[in-house]
Structure formats: C-alpha cells, structure tokens
Length: 466
Image (cartoon, rainbow, N blue to C red; front, side, top):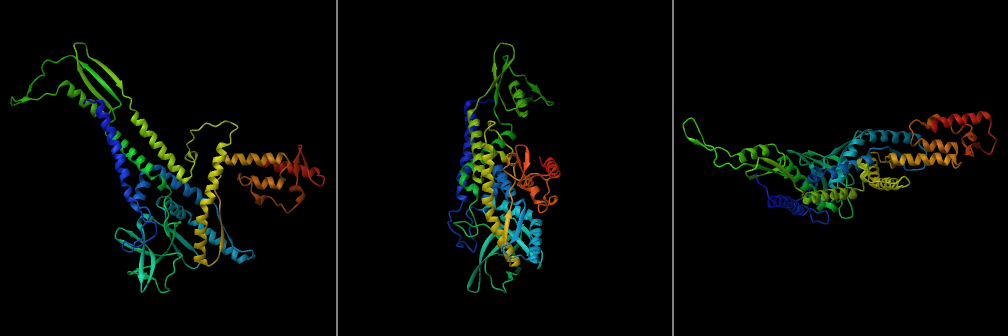
C-alpha cells in the first residue's frame, strides 16, 4: 500500500470537493420575499423545511444553541397578573389557576421554542374545556400553512401530515366563519403559530441563516472526517520496511498439482497493516542490509486548516444565537483577578434573554385572551448564572456593611439568591423600626435608640443570612 504526496493531496481535494458540493446546495433556500400561495395553495417558507431539519440534525452547535436558548427563555418562573389596577379577588384566583395550567404545559412551550429557533417558526395545539386548557407542540417539520377558499373568501389553515394522516388547524388570530368547523371531512382543531417578522406573516428567518455558508462547510468537514476515520484511511505516517532482496518468489502447488500464486512478503505485510486501521502508509525498499523499520510522521497542515474552519463555524453559530461560549461549559479564555469581563458577558446575555422573551410574552398574552377573554401581564424570569449570583450577593453584603441598605432591604435582596431565606418567615409590618436599622461602623443605628433586645434580634437574623 504505497502512498505519495500526490495521494495525500488527492484526499484533501476530495474533502474540498465535498465542501463545495454542500455549498452548491444553497439553491435549497427560497428567494421568496413575502408569504405567497403561487405554488398550489401552500405558503413558501424562507428556508425549506428539509434544509432546516438537515442543519438541526447535522450541526451540533445549531442544535445546542436552539435548546439552550429555548431552555433559558422558557424553563423559568412565569407569572400572570391581571392587566388592570382594579382589585378583584375572584379574578386573581382565576389568573392563578391559569398560571398553574400554563406551568403544567411549560415543556410544550419549550418544544415550540426549539422548533422556532431552528426552523424560523413553531406551532402548538391548544384545547379548552371551559376551565382548563392544555397545550401540545406540533412538530413543525410535519406542517405547512395552506390557503383555502370557502365560497368567495380565502383563509389560512395549518396542515399537518404524519405518514398518511392529515390534520387541519385553525390558526389563532385569523378570522373564520362561525360555522367553519370541518375541512375536507377533517374536524378542525385550534393552534397558535409563533413566527412572523418584517418580511413574513407566519414565518421568520432562522437565526443560523446569516452564517449558513460556514455551517454547511462545517457539516461537510465533519462528515468527511467521520468517513475517513471510520475506514481507517488517515495517513498519519509512513512505515518504511527495509527487506533483504528476494531473488525468486516461492512456488506452491495445490492437491491437483497446479501452481498456486503466492503473495509476496510485501503484499502480506501490507494487508496485515491495512486491516489494523492504523492510519499508517507502508513503503517497501530492498537492500542487502538486515531488515529495519523506520517510521516517518507526516505533517499535513491542511487538516489543521480544516479544523480551524470548523472552530470558526461553531463560534459563528453561537454569535448568531447570542450565546456565550461559557454557557456551553467551555471556558478557554484566561482572565485576571480584577477583570469583570465574565460578569459583563453574563449581563449582556441576560439582557438579550429578556429582549428575546418579549415575543413569547406577547404569544402567551394572545393565547390567554383567546381562551379566557381576559388580558394579563406576563412576567418571565431568566436564569441566574453562578458568576452573576456571586457578584450580586457580594454587592448586597457590601452595601449592608457600608450602611447603604436597611435590614429589610438586605434580607429581601438576598432572598433572590439564597433558598434558605424564606420571606414568609419575616413579618416586616411588625416592629418596623427593627427592619429600618442600618449597619454603621459596626453598630446598628436608627432614628430611635436601639434596645439590647433589638440588637440581639438583629444579631440573630444576621447569623442566618450572612
């Protein structure tokens, strides 16, 4: 099994050709600039579903980014409150029950968000029994938005096809005739679509589209590397076997007396090494010297170049989704003790999460109004990452020690970061002067002089929170 520089370069050419073929698949993207039903009655998505699924299944960083962003946005506390200033105990009870129903279906909202971030849109079915509602994410790769005609009017429906079964859904926000309950013999269900941007009504451009060329390149390299490794066809070195000259190959005969071709020494050794998948090329030479083995390591900068392309593609995906590398539990950057770079990264990421939550808040508001005909405010928390937690707790303690916060403010602030502190254990309406104390020069002072009993209470409270 001889190998030369020409063969190595040919292998690299195959990889580059594979990359080029994937880049040529860019025609899979639609050039449509708006929703249209020009082709049959089906609305065209900005990126074909086949392409979106291919990217999600073959780019690990796209899949990770979709899941991380959906998790950090959705899988947190969600609070609903009435959208008015009028106190209504009965209405507040109803809203609390609605909040409980929503949290019970939080995983379905998460699945909806994952679809949205890889495909540019997502759909969820909702059912209502006059009290409780349930949600069920509809896998978006099974769906299309179609335009149907009823009499002289045209309407949009979501069509889901799974194997040979077809289901139709009315879309939340669309106006339909009152008696429009079936289509093509199929009972119409209700769904809500998350999507739409400045170009499309129902769809959005997936975030990864801006770096699609790098993503297809990264996928091509990964697939080629896997194929090369799995077949043991990586030439990482040359094994030079120096044999004594063999004047004449031995001849053997079978039981019928016919001559049988015998493999040469070179052929036998070559096959054995090839079957070992050692990634080593074999080169034979002959001389009158004793047999020697020399291993020569090959340096191929092309592989280093391709690995660099992969790393840049992966970082580009994270940039598209606004996710810091440390969120993937990868931290390769060195930082000085006095640097607040990491803290700044977490603050920017948290701010981006809050901005991204706005579309989900609006989505939930519309869903609740469609079900219950009441308007609510939606609050969604974001994760508190360890670096940020430690920094903010440290600031609270520092502000308490400098007398900038009262005892009540300190306890309330720390309760957000420490599960041990339960605000229900404290009654701030009783003995208010106690909760107004500040720490100044290691003493506790307020407008009134503190009694020994009050000082003892403060000391006991501080032992539980500091």
